[in-house]
Length: 153
Image 1 (cartoon, rainbow, N blue to C red):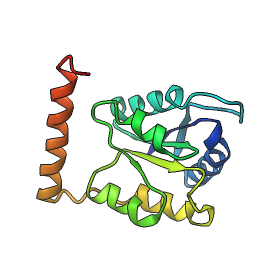
Image 2 (cartoon, rainbow, N blue to C red):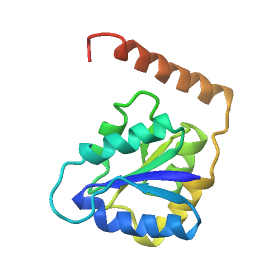
Image 3 (tube, helix red, strand yellow):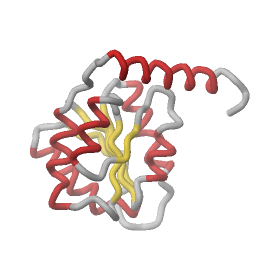
């Protein structure tokens, strides 16, 4: 497994911890930055991680102060299902129910003592393939297609 990862300045410290955990688990990490705590713009990191998750059919992890900006940006990429998860339960459900391919973390609210467990659960939980979840994801795909093929933006 390989993971695309990115953060802005607000998530940089937590990103280092996430990256260290992933590498310890033998997961190849493709780091799209940032590399320091200097102020920067989250879309510059969310977009390449989301595009990589989509094109390479892999997963991504994004981190910013709240996780909200990263989530909004990543979810603009058709085929990306970015989920803001700051506890084990939402991490599990994002995979089981939504087949989330991008995990978004809030550096401000994720409890660091639970970080490794959140990552472990998100990385190791499979999509259930349940009929109702497939039906819902198909509806999401229809919405993406409707708005990506129109001029409504």
